[in-house]
Length: 247
Image 1 (tube, rainbow, N blue to C red):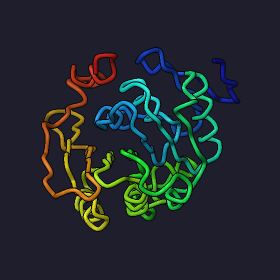
Image 2 (image 1 turned 90 degrees about the vertical axis):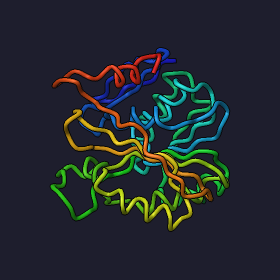
Image 3 (image 1 turned 180 degrees about the horizontal axis):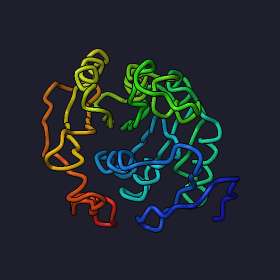
Image 4 (image 1 turned 30 degrees about the vertical axis):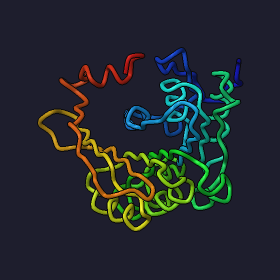
């Protein structure tokens, strides 16, 4: 199905089952962290899944392409981003089971229903509100800094949405891991898996993928690290596999 494009928008091929996405070249576009999150999330066919801070809608679209039809809802606070994501769902003819709602993470349970979902994914803003250089563009700053929601807000929302035993998946910065684990414990989401993502084999981790179980036991396992590049500009075979149909 055709979907209308607005000024500065383009259509990008996702390289999986012919799926495509609409992005605005002047706004926040998805990166490798979103692709890795959609790969890391162990979503099963037919499950009800919520993606918080959904942005362009990349994570639900990739999960639908990877795992087959389930029921995916993206929650995004910026109205034009939510609209763009819904037009991407139309573009792929998946709007019957992939939809995006404009709303605040802090109102997630009221908007979507308490304890109704089997999985929650989130690629949240990484930077505390007062840290680092803030982009002068407000909407770009919102994507990177905790201006409209905090780490605690997204973990609290995930807990409220998940059924007992439901699964939480997040990508974040390794430097905030102690805080992440503390907040997950406070909301009774037991850490289950962690994968550290390194730009090169000899460099410190730049991202961490972490999952947890609502109401589970604290038995986290640290899996083999994921290395992004084998040389500048050249992805490792593992990352290429994630991007390809067989990933």
